[in-house]
Image (tube, rainbow, N blue to C red):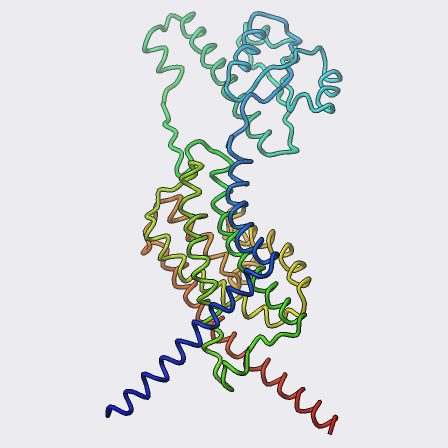
Length: 412
């Protein structure tokens, strides 16, 4: 290659880079001039990651108010009521005489559960029979149900162990032998990845990924809809030569990517540490993993934005997909139990792989090599949506040129 060819190649490369930089800066200019886009890209991504962890900061329900119906009114039944109140989960707020009184308190939302100790409770224990304690749980929220069952089971199991020891002592078995006979095996509880069993630690890492996905998608489609409403060219013919769509795609993508690298670092690295959410993964692995995720979301959003005709359309699409993406990610319901059709549908969206990969790295301490499936899938999505965006932009330009030619012929 001679010097003239090298210089021509360098000049062409410089021009392409200049086009990309111009488009990137122009995209920033459009965003910063639109207050709605500023709220989406900067306001929502700043406030939402702070808002949700603040709401779920307590993680678990403690001292759940319950009522006790003590029909036995014996020493043993009163001991059971004290044990229930002593658990960290329950607070015996009321002692009532019957279920009708308990119902009235429940419907007034003063209690979220009822424990009924029957009349024959103490008698059956003294006769070496099996006694019954009825637990009525509030199932309007799984958090109430979980807390109620944990507290009630703890008190009942401890009472049962004491009764076993009493019976063994009465039979002449005492000391360590009685303890082993009452509890022949000991189990150790090891809670993985969410030691406090908190709802926030379970939910918020997923929500942070969805916030990034949805604000980026909403912002890009909203911006494109605004340009169409104002009849501004999405593909500037002065800067983008016919058939050459790489500068616009790279320029726009560079704008969004550079912006969301900072936002993702704030939401996925800083927020879990500020609010003490699970964060045992390597930050470098998270950054490397979210590089294809951001590219996939950007090109996916740019592809969908081709079909957005006005600003309001993106507002309708945005809330529709938000809840769907949460369920398709497999965090609340295992993907193995989903119908294959829904699993296949979920693979369309980058958030499905992004959520699974982020949970494994951030909450479970996996390395990048252990999330290869999600990592490769995101790169494939980024490549597919990039190519699809090129074809969509080309089709859009040709359609516009055809309409322009028809209009010129009709006017002539």
